[in-house]
Length: 160
Image (cartoon, rainbow, N blue to C red; front, side):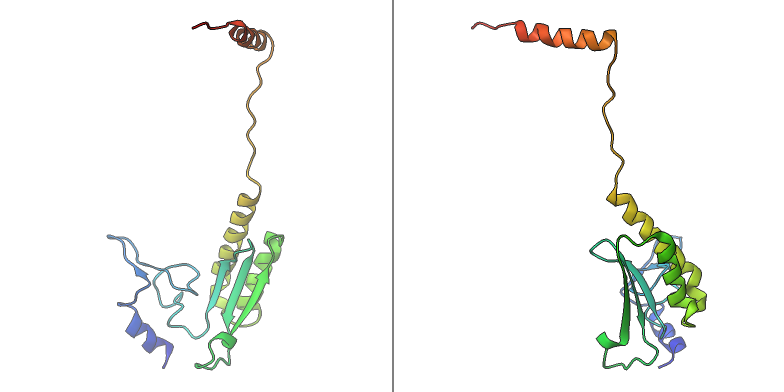
């Protein structure tokens, strides 16, 4: 079945479609890099699909469907490239660009794939080292007053 015919069958009725009020419709299917409901970015209607997502270990995984994929062999039809958590953002962007346009796979998705890989690497580094907040120290007379006030409270003995 051709990709155009698949899109005509799937475009109005699929379970991944998310419709807003008057705004654009989105899609949450695998292989849709921009999460926009359109034929260009669809992971259901295109034969060459690339998916970039965060792996459970904190890295990035790039998955694409092989060109000579057989319909009855689903697992072996996909190739995976795993990037570790320590992989830098420039290297992740380069790999995303190479997997899309560099190997002649889907050159039209290069910019979107690089943007998604960049966003995932930024999110991974942000959660790894959160900024630490230290309480501000009091100096001078204010510090002496607070320590003397705490000592006075300790000296008081309550009798029942």
